[in-house]
Length: 203
Image 1 (tube, helix red, strand yellow):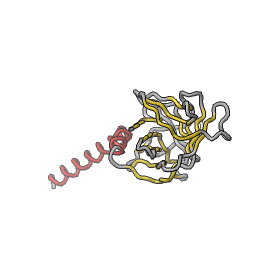
Image 2 (cartoon, one colour):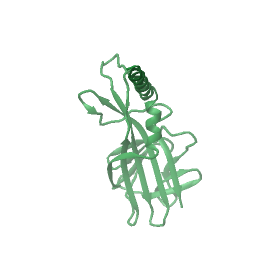
Image 3 (spheres, one colour):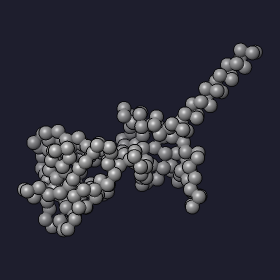
Image 4 (cartoon, helix red, strand yellow):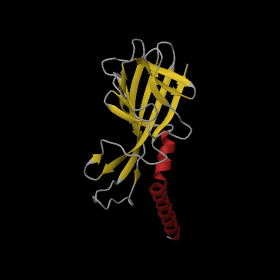
């Protein structure tokens, strides 16, 4: 009988420790798992891409998605504009990736737009974390409506030019689950851990 009680105490203590770890370190655990496994919810071709801004920061508009360039990960620097041959292009780490020729009918002021040229393979993917984490201590005193769970949501551009050049861009944000309403359609930022977190360009 004593052995059974000792075993029950050990199991209860282990369960309590795991619960505490999940509550207080769930975000970090989820981020680690995300490196190896995420759930893809949307994948499709890029039909159009546009930029709104003054060259640094601003917004990249991919189909119907607006992706911010104002929050970038440590060590990342980029600029967006037009090249000498009138193409919308991204520059980062001494490399330039041209998206395509500017569409003159849509370009005015700080708005530049283009379409993927024939032969390019351009896609946008949306994924989310496999593991979400509970947020029992999150309170919104203004609205009284607080999320009970959170998870990461990822937006990724994969673009391969007919010349063989490749571009990958990855954004990470947080998505909230509200009781009775399900996962929110939008996303939220968290200083230091969300925004554009990766740019890779290969010739």
